[in-house]
Length: 406
Image 1 (cartoon, rainbow, N blue to C red):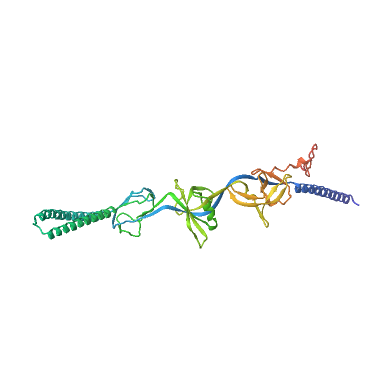
Image 2 (spheres, rainbow, N blue to C red):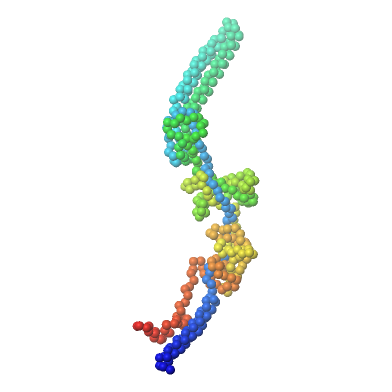
């Protein structure tokens, strides 16, 4: 056998031995590491079950309505002489909104007053004649029939003067209608009529619409099954208005009205709440989430809502035991509590610890590492801490192998 063949055979045998050694050595280490990972506890977030006083709430979708809404229309016809308000501004009750040209109505009033003076003059003459007749009747200079006729004339003229007074009062009223005043305090909407336009009394088109927004109402509905519960809770229940995303409290008010009938088509009944709305946070037509408080639970057991799991047999939680393992604990959930928590009616007591995050990796009896909310699990230990070395690394106390080419 030649020297070259011997060298090739020796190289092949050396490489095969090295491969076998590394394969058996690496496989054993991998198995040991795999077994160590399998036995490691599963990190989860766990919280302690607490007790608190929980308000009992009924939630619904509501609509904001103005306390009063008035469409201001002219009561007499004529030409708009002036518009005396700004759109969107606050208007006080009895403030002048607009004026109609009053000359026609002033003329009618003057004519009525003139007619009244004429009739009053006739009445004065008739009363003087009656007085003379009453004096002359004593001397038999006037017939009794003439005296009675004069009395009738006086009474007729008195009635005519009274009618003139009524006509003058009516003319003054019509004259007053030429000055259009705000019937309520509220916000002015968009102007519908401009200066110079002709308007008619009682027309369908309003000059402007006023809405009273302080205070303001919220109208909502609840299922008829809740009627007795609401009525039993007493008057002036607290009502909270939240925005459409249900993230922020917009206003707090009180329940003012429970409707006197149930809608048979929907099986619901209406309620009305009143809000002070001092900051104008609520607006007519706005949709809001309504929360009505109808009572409270004292010392109720509560857990985070995300800790509650649901299965084919009902609701349950993972209970952390004293041996740092978890057990499947059936529970009976109740109403929702503020802060993303849920009342538990049965199955838990204060002081128990339940898993709130990381349940997807658990099964009954699994070993866990219970972490507080926001706490992160410790970093895995470095490879050198166990005394093991990676291929190509030097053991403690040894000189590291030189790299080829160095």
